[in-house]
Picture 1 (cartoon, rainbow, N blue to C red):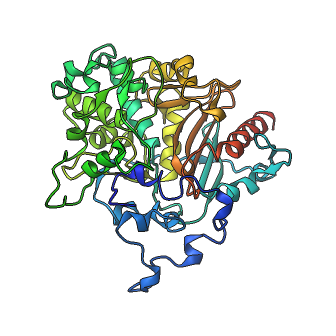
Picture 2: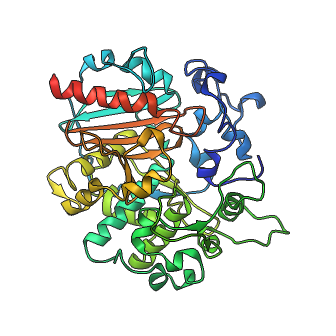
Picture 3: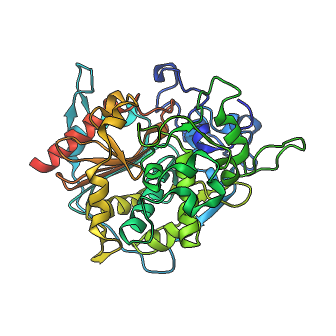
Length: 432
C-alpha cells in the first residue's frame, strides 16, 4: 500500500477482501495480549508507527483505532468547561444470554458470543435513558477514545440538517451558490440535499485495485504530511473537491462516496464561518454533558476530515444517540428542533438506495448521512467501517453504541451477525 493518509481509505484497504476466518480471533489479536507499544522504549517488533500500511494493517489496527492522535495531526472537539451530566445505570445481566440467529445461518448465538465474533472493543446499550449494558475490550477502556470512522459523516449530516430546519441552509440551493469555487466541479450543479443524501453523480472511482483510481489522488491530496517535492496535485480536501467531474444525473441513485461529506463540511463552514470540529463542539459536544473532548484528524491546511476523522469516548456517543432518540432533547434541554430527527428518521429515496445493492440493508435508505433501516422498529444508524455503530431503535427506546476493530472493513461482513443481535436485544428489553 502506497502513501495513503486518508482514514476512510486506510480502513478499506489492506485486507478488504480477505475472509475474517483467515485472521487471528479476537482473543488472540487483543492488542494488550500482543503487547503493542509497551515498554520504554517499546521493542522494535512491538512498535506501531508510520507509514499507514503498518499502523492500519491487522492486527495492529486493533491498537491504532484507540490511538489515532498519536499517529496523525488532530483538532479538538471540545466539551467546553461545563459540568458533566452523568448517565444513570440499571445494568441488566440477562442481556448476555439473549440469543439470535444470524442472517442466513442456522445455529443460534448468544449476545456475549457475538461480541467476540465481531471483534468488539466496546459496547454500550441504553434503554429508557439508562445504561443497561457496558463492556470494554481490546484497546479500549472507559477513559479511552476510539476512531468513529464514517460515523463522523452522520455528525456532519446532523449539523447540516439542523441548519436546514433552522432556515440557515437551503437544501434546494445549488452548491455553487454557496461555494463558488465548486461551480466547475460536479458538486456545482448538485443541490445541497443531493450532497446530504449522497445522490450526487460523480465521476469518481474507489477501485482500490486500480493504482490510478481517484481515491488515491484524493488520499494524496488529503495527507496532512509534507508532499513530495515533485508533487503537483491538489493540496487538501477542498482543493481536491474542485477537480471532481460529473458522471450521470444528480438525484438518480445513491452512491456512497466520502467526498460528499467533505463537500458538505465545506458548505457548513461557509455558511457558519466555523469548521466542522468547532461547529460540532459548539452545537452538540459542549451542550450535551459530555465527559470527554473528542478530536478529529485534519489535512495539511488544518481542515477537519468531515467524512471519517472523529475519535470519541463511548459514553459520549451514547449521549449523541440519546439526542437522536429523544428528538434533540437531553438532560431536560433542547439542543435542536424535533423536526431534525423526524426528517432523518423518515429516510430518503428507497428506489435510489436499492440501486446501490446493499444486500444486508434491503429496503433501507440514506438521509442526511444516516442509514435508515425502515424495519418494524423504525431503527436508524450511524455506521463506520470495521464495525462502528450508533444504532437507534425508537420502538424499543434503545440506543446501542459499538466500537470494533473487525479485520475486514466492510460492514456487509458484520451485519449478518450484528443486525439480528440488535433486534434480539431490543425485543428482550421491550418484554422484560
